[in-house]
Length: 144
Image 1 (tube, rainbow, N blue to C red):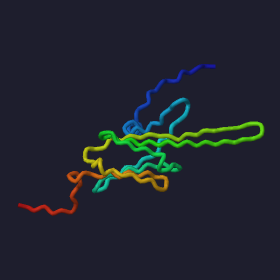
Image 2 (cartoon, one colour; image 1 turned 120 degrees about the vertical axis):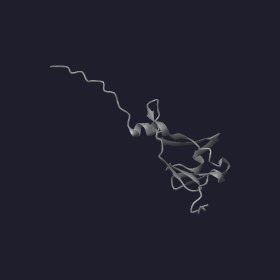
Image 3 (cartoon, rainbow, N blue to C red; image 1 turned 90 degrees about the horizontal axis):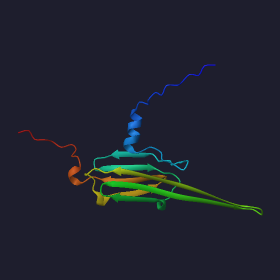
Image 4 (cartoon, rainbow, N blue to C red; image 1 turned 90 degrees about the vertical axis):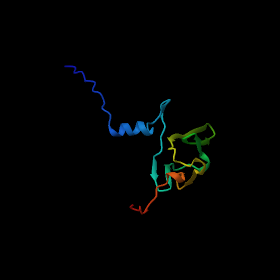
């Protein structure tokens, strides 16, 4: 029998690796548990941005949105506790759902008018643009 040594080929980064690092979408490993990070969609409109966080099974009270300078942080934590009592034993189980995502906001956001809404398992955050940052559409330019 012959032992063959495997070569330690280096992993070449892909576009997905770069995106995960840029957007901070790497799962956190802590004490053997994997923290699940919800998917986020970001859409730009003429008047602002909309951040949609897919977080089904949570309630409005489970969320905490914090704005510190130009960084918006979205946190959620939910605790589920079940208890089963029998003549011979009592069993309690605790389950925690938690996540945190942070995004750097551009300077063009009007931070005093940020609004959030949670409906049907989606947290939507409206990030309006400042007046000077809004794009003018369908405007004629006079030729001189």
